[in-house]
Length: 318
Image (cartoon, rainbow, N blue to C red; front, side, top):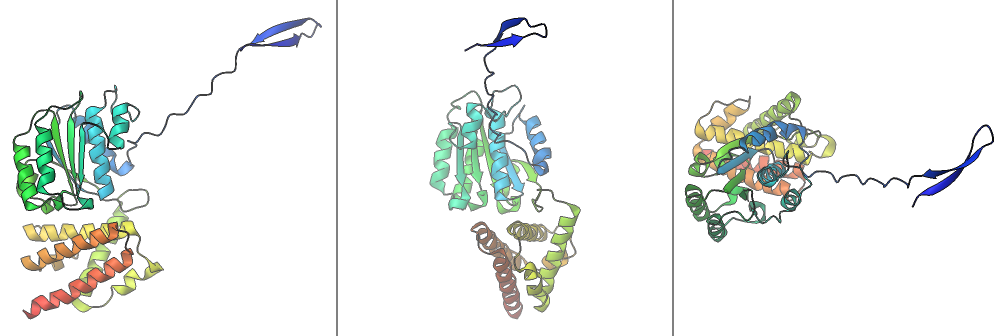
């Protein structure tokens, strides 16, 4: 409602002035669910360009599990948001995808257990239908290394006979964890490691990983030098422990395919036999699961080092 105010001029003249109603309080917009961390900005830009002609299968490797699922949902929003500059983060599609309730989003998460053939059969039925909305149906298999062999083979058939408008997204720490045929049918995108508090994988962080790998290799050979490192400050940060395990997984993968070892500790992994590398990969997977389950990271790393120290000696005595 308008208000009036008595105004007296310097000459003594009095008059009433009408005041406008108080301006409405502007509500601030909620934060977008698609705020891209700096370390993922390059990848997001590539996805924006791919969205004009999206592949029917994508594979996101690297980073950590949270980064991978975030980029998968970003990709789903990019393909379904109808804003002028998608994804806007404010429309119904963006909000529903962020909450994993969108009709054209299907998510199976291997962190909750093995992805079985029955799950994939459900996917195959959905993939034969057109999307419900104007965008694309996005089928996400998080931690796809948890696919059983039967499920992986069934998924391969679905990927070989896709219906237009469907996009498969596989998420895994390393492409080597998946069937080669699944990888060969996917557009592979590698996420950077998240090692620092600000999310940037700096040269200093890479050097720190090399030092951890060298210490691990030295302990497995001599049985010394590891516990002193994990005991520094009483606790290894969870993010650092995840980075160490991922760095080891990369070394194992390179050794399995005969790649040139890029780090000073790579010689240790390259000298392991195939059966030892496969065993080490199993232990690393168990260690990753323990870190994800919030077990003390220092204890996880210590147990890993002791187990590898012991079984390398068992192998050598065979």
